[in-house]
Image 1 (cartoon, rainbow, N blue to C red):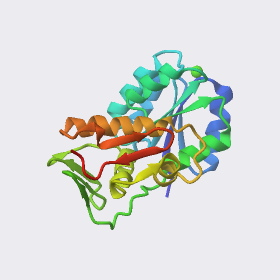
Image 2: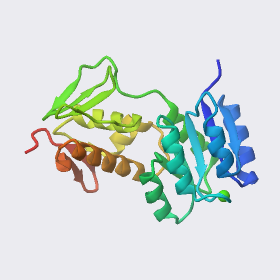
Image 3: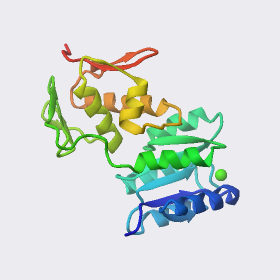
Image 4: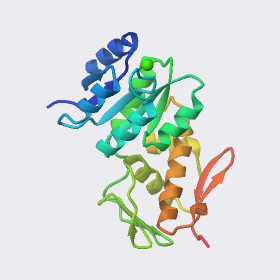
Length: 231
Ligand code: CA
């Protein structure tokens, strides 16, 4: 049986070659692309990539545009951007374009591999658990479906896990550490901006289904709380 497929998009061979080798040694099937054009071609090969590592600084096309194209073609894949230090704007725009996470260069190989592992690991939600219902929002772990006011809310895998965790503990203050540990991985090395971006996405998607986005309260310096009795 072959392992998960990773599409590695990086034009700098000094990064791409050792990274590709390291990923292969972990059992991943690696497809490498040095340009956006090749990356878009390879994204259509079967089986579809499970995860994309995407350098934002490519020679032929803007990385954020590539992220957007890849998101359209690969709705289920995890997209992790590789960005230069200080490229905060790119990160925000890229996450908005459909990327799931980012890693800042230069990165430690061990950390990047841990991050990839965390993203590819099976969902952390207990699939035998009964659906949770809070004020019109239903999360059904066995079907991995979410509805709000009867409207299906399309969530990406980690968004679903995050909402399931918040809803399960509705009314409770849940710390950032807890969320990073329970929803992502016990050994998360990266920035937790990823968490905030996922919360923003949840608020936006819930609001589109008529749910007050303030149902998820930000607890500054601590974490988040899903309001048990939203008004
Ligand atoms: Ca580059």
